[in-house]
Length: 88
Image 1: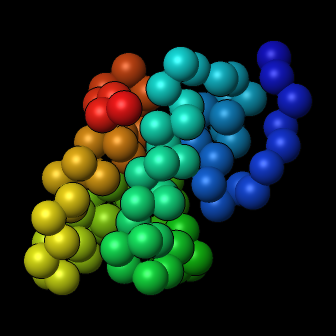
Image 2: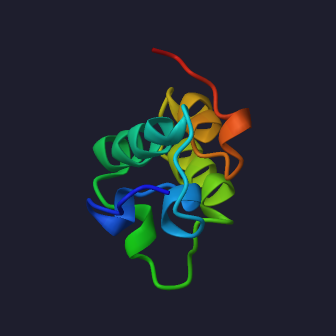
């Protein structure tokens, strides 16, 4: 187990729900920050959204704005940390 610290709206599902860390945990936070930089708001501040459906929402919002990084951000926001693509 790890100690939970940080801003909850940037925490990955595995840290927030399971209190477990994964080698790809920080990729989730990078995806949230990438979305904020492109869309100018945090997608998790929408009350109807949760971490389980954020991936599709983020992709659709960024595609509508014609953001070229939409697909990369999509791959960072997989709920399953094993599926997150490391671009770094």
